[in-house]
Image (cartoon, rainbow, N blue to C red; front, side, top):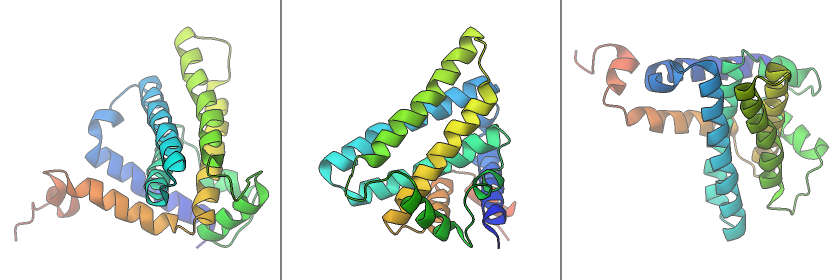
Length: 197
């Protein structure tokens, strides 16, 4: 499976998950949804900082997976085909390989635990500015700027995950399943019967 197909399948899985398990967010107007996602990313910036300061690799791993989820959500909100956009600049046979290529090609210092923090400060700061500009109806190309910021966050998350030897897709599926299991309606969403035969 190509990286584009792999990513599109993950975006589809995220869309279906959000429609079932996060209806409160899915029904928000687009501007409000984007602000909500920028707030998620701001939270992850703080979490990445805490993990780096405490040298907590497990915490960094969990936040990377949550950040990957939000990148997919933002891409879906923006109707952004991450696979097409990333493949136009980086050819790779798999998502894991793409992460390795990005880890080598981005200006990433392997021994800098704050690299991902700096990436989130820079790129989510741009996303937050675009959300704010939207409120003021400033003359700014919102959608393209948001897509660029999201793609930069995606590249950073994938690079960091590869550098930490994290299988993003498997970890993503495990994390999504854990979130889904917390819903009282999980069995209905999964098989439509509520677990009854």
